[in-house]
Length: 357
Ligand code: DAH
Image (spheres, rainbow, N blue to C red):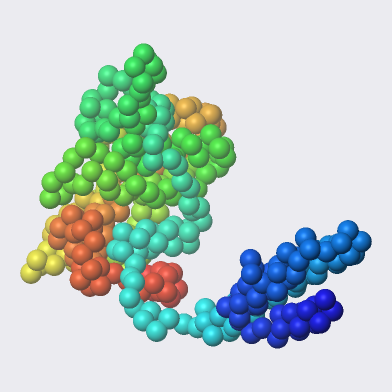
């Protein structure tokens, strides 16, 4: 028995792969293995012999089995180590084809706008895209019967039968983030809120999902003059021109009083847009002084605080700045288009480094 033990323990220790190990298992403790055959001989032994040989054979079988298991595990570890060694890869090396992906113009413009307003002390705020109709409408002074509600082509969510609460909506503008920010942080406030908005409208100049950036500044002595300066700085920085003339046109939004739509001086000579010169005007955003009812909805005392707000269509200003004629191209995922209009991934827009280069 000692010979058997020495032979197999030695052979197992020397096995170099799992197949060899399996052969040894069959030879030693398999059905017709040497140890198994010895166990069959127990029946022919006398009681006294069996009492000695039985436990000894069992112990030998156990010893061989655990040696097999231990070796199997060690071989597995070694195989894994070997694989890790041959498949080693330095993930910190730069990619060989770094220009394969590009930044979508919408993302680029969102980053540009954020960089410009960050420079003027505006933080970025966010809100949910599925909104309650209170945040999307009522809190913004758009009650149920107001025509603006009908004009918004709103997507409503479905309520279970018998559930009479008003349905949620896909937010039709980024303005509800005004209310959420007022409630969450109180006055003073200086934020922009870029994001996706939704309206049931689809043609050459409308897609059911598009992007806006909302602006909101609230403090004790904010006036329309501050609004005008901020927007002028924004337009100059965004279109990368030294000077630009803005025209404030009286308008109406339920959430601002007074309200103004803002046009910029431009020309369309030869079909290309030039901002800052010429005889044409281009409408680029809506704005105004925040309505007292809106401040109240945001738990801010309108006797103590006032502020301005504005809303810009990101898709629209992206088309204007980068000469993109059809809005729907934004959503086509055409690789050739993305390579042409896309931006380098590592070129984050900053005011000092250049917005678009
Ligand atoms: N929410 C408006 C829209 O989607 C845009 C807007 C206009 C936002 C005037 C404002 C504002 O904050 O003051 O058409």
